Image 1 (cartoon, rainbow, N blue to C red):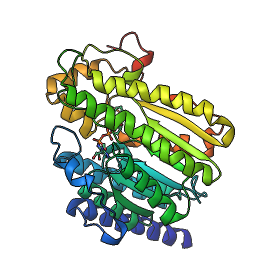
Image 2: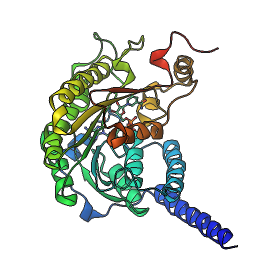
Image 3: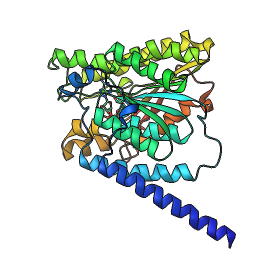
Image 4: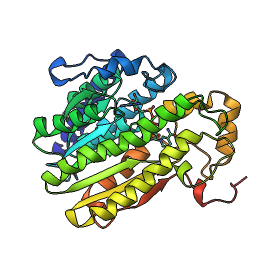
Length: 338
Ligand SMILES: NC(=O)c1ccc[n+]([C@@H]2O[C@H](COP(=O)([O-])OP(=O)(O)OC[C@H]3O[C@@H](n4cnc5c(N)ncnc54)[C@H](O)[C@@H]3O)[C@@H](O)[C@H]2O)c1
């Protein structure tokens, strides 16, 4: 009888929490202005329309709603102590996709979160949604290709929560004009390397000293499967930037190995996110790509977020300099099942 009542209250609380989360995402909640900081580079960055920094399209927002509901359920059914209790994490590119889901998951595991992004509206929605279901989170708007902005993101983490233990260098772009070496415009090459590679390096430049001050921690850099294998659909600037992230990760991992700082990389394969779907555009291209994925589907952002949690937590305590591949089997395959 008593057990039945507890079960009833438990499912009612999940339903209520899910409804709150759903309406938050639906209505695109406004930011708590006190929690935000907007460096001047934000407005400049927003004018660069070629890059995938805009708010999610409607169907993607719908998908995020459903996903947030499953995260809510996960939060309420989590009994053990969180894997990241007492830790502070800075997540760049947290306004959408992988970064946004990682913010939810890390908050669920007890971390205090600083979400950073160049899109003011996206970061406001992400920070409010995490806070609304009980996570500790502040947002900061900034461009990772601007060193001062990255320095401000790290400072925000230390000022707000006292220290920084986890740095998730996730912000990245894939330009629609990125193609082969001959045709890719030079400004696309410069900007892609500036955001994807230099943004990651700046994160390490300012984040690693902070992690050192905190007594150690984990850096997770987001590379890609394309850093490991070639493709007949080239995006040379993107691919080169992701390859550079892997080299950077290995070098820093070795250099900081005896300081309690681990540095690892994630290599996701094709995911069902804005970044990739906007790039593929046509159904024909989507179907062509699916044929090369042994598992026969795109990955989901939460599957990458779970890998990020593994690298952020002590579950991966003997791993550093690694490239963790999450690609549905692509890089291990010669062909796909019929
Ligand atoms: N989607 C995929 O299939 C895939 C595959 C492999 C790797 N990745 C990598 O994963 C990371 C996240 O990608 P996603 O798929 O979640 O993409 P996404 O476009 O959904 O999210 C990227 C976020 O980064 C932000 N951003 C862009 N430029 C920025 C800048 N200069 N400063 C701060 N924030 C900036 C955007 O506003 C956006 O919120 C990227 O590094 C991407 O290259 C994605």
